[in-house]
Image: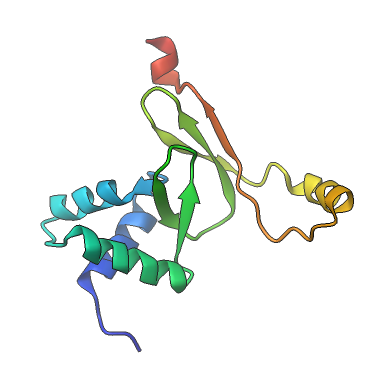
Length: 127
């Protein structure tokens, strides 16, 4: 059994209890500091890698050049605002029926996929 880790516990809680999606490492570090937890960049990075290796956290690429993290829960897609960077969940799998077509045309056996939409969120669109 792994040694208890307040940083891992705080990250786990942050990623599962907060409605936000696609946290960057800097955003997670700021959130931990806001909760008065003393942790540095490398400690948070190692804790995230450990949680990812255990299957509790997913590293997500949202097309903005940053590694982003979220709890490994139900499969869903993402949408990111091009203006303010807000990330939201698009529930469900929108390409589920397409995997057979991709397999048939490429010869690949699909094991996973990620789909990220981008556009303007309602706030930025009305501004």
